[in-house]
Length: 128
Image (cartoon, rainbow, N blue to C red; front, side, top):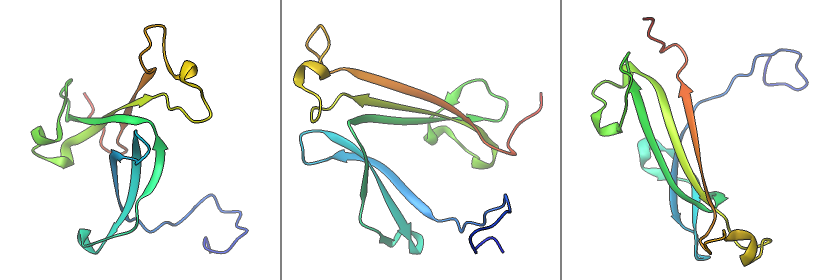
């Protein structure tokens, strides 16, 4: 019984649910990443949770089949053929516990970093 604690089983049963991730102004002069649970086919949404302050950009591209290039979602004609996802997220330093001097570079511009992650979708590998 995976639902009773403690369990010595390495298995965990989780009911899947839909979640919407998006960027929005946070009301403090910056942008943040938000998460919102979606139910009833999108008709009902929970209140949004702010996940990370300072996220300024988020882009996803997709590898389809054995093609080498990653493409935008609009170019995907069959989601069953998607084998990997490239997630690119840009963060900007945020004042708060940091001072203005800590969030700016030598050119006086806000420090930013971009995270690139490549996610291979399980059971979608195309053998070549």
